[in-house]
Image 1 (tube, rainbow, N blue to C red):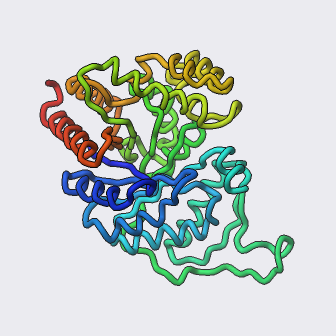
Image 2: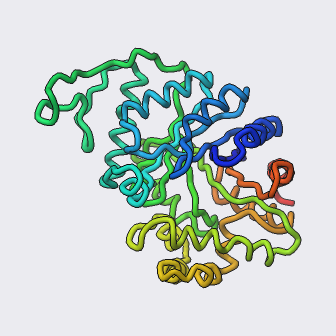
Length: 354
């Protein structure tokens, strides 16, 4: 099982750099840099490329439509160049609240936009002229929509000899199928291994079959909070509020991909109840409505042996890369948590049946 960490550029940036450098020293394979409605991902990734030597650097994720498809391709190719082939392109559709509220981009036809964007990346990386009559974009812009002076352009920059791996952050069945069909990896979230087959893997597998592949051709990269504590009940209680936010606040009353994902994993009644309470402004009641089994199912928290058993469940479910969010108030505490988690994963690989 490969390992990854994730961060944003919020907070003490030099501390974040030290965190990634130590994670690299400890043997972590990847770092994913988030881009939601705070800091961008490009700036920290470029900085980390100069401050690390081996660890892979991923956008976790670039949101479709925030950059033009060509600029997105140029950015990816540039990061691949300055990192000497260590960049991984993580893409996601985001949701209507962020796309329309923050960026003024209509959240429409995300699957078609993803398909068109990847075609532009392919053309840019191959050195061909970027000419596309897609479902969501036409390049060059036709004369009926512009001055008529545009022409297909070939990027002056040539792609790195190492192709850019594409990871797609997907939750809906249609986007999951597309992920299985074309991507090198799946950036997943809201993951409960016991319910993942019907919620996720059946769709990823169907998509992979379209291009004569299997799930073995896809890096299943899943993220979870990592925390150790002898009192499981106390550790669980501290994390209910975060799940309540995912179920109730990460989206609107009509569009919440996280809520839908948990519903498909057997928590439909819980998801509906928590969202209703959240939207009514009853945040503490929403948190109290999150059951223990959902918290423990989607995280790696608790006593050491319990965390080990959950890691085994993730491995058995088909997770190839575990994206760790180690708990801790200070850098040293987070690194200590990370180191302990890495030791458990190494032990799991050596002694899987213990």
